[in-house]
Amino acid sequence: VRGHVLEMKQAILFFLVVYAVERLSETFRKRTKLNGKIIAPYSLPLIVIAYVSFYLAVFRAWYELDTGSLYYSATLTGMAAVVVSLIGRNWAIKTLGVYHSIHIEIRECHELIQSGPYLYLRNPYYLSNITEAIGLPLVVNSKLAMSIACFIYVPILFHRLILEEKALETKFQGLFVEYKRRVPMIFPRFCKFMGI
Image 1 (cartoon, rainbow, N blue to C red):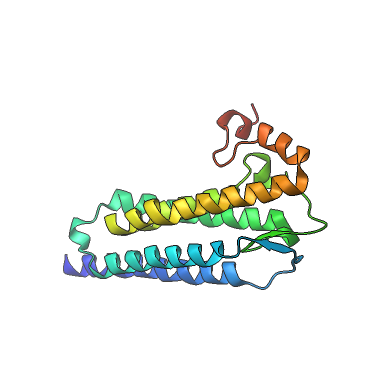
Image 2: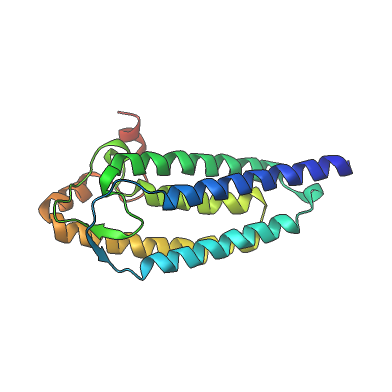
């Protein structure tokens, strides 16, 4: 039994480390991009601090983990959510192409992307981050990490999302207003997603 507990703990650590490396490389990977005006530059450090705090809480929970009392269904659900968030975020990044930025950044020749995941919701990147923020604490069954994610990280994400939408509306005016009317902010309408 002790060997099984140790194997499970090592498997969770492997998952967390591989994901952390992927997340860092995804965030800071050099990509071809168009530079523009950065709006609310303070928002990036806020998000980074909140993200690092909840990820450290996840690792602390892993360190203190007693896999004998682990809810495996929560762990597996969390892992699935993290993988889905990875796929969704990379789909959003690929769709944005040269307009992707870790900042709120508006370019002179900015194009309003309405394809790929942006056909179904206006902020798929943020939805992926929220899915990740819920998934990671589930992996290690951490109430502390979940609290940091839900009460600090996610509200900061929503604050930034609102600032970004205001900047896009200022840039695109009526075009963005029409896009807002047609496409939900963060959760896709099931019928539209299914093509009904």
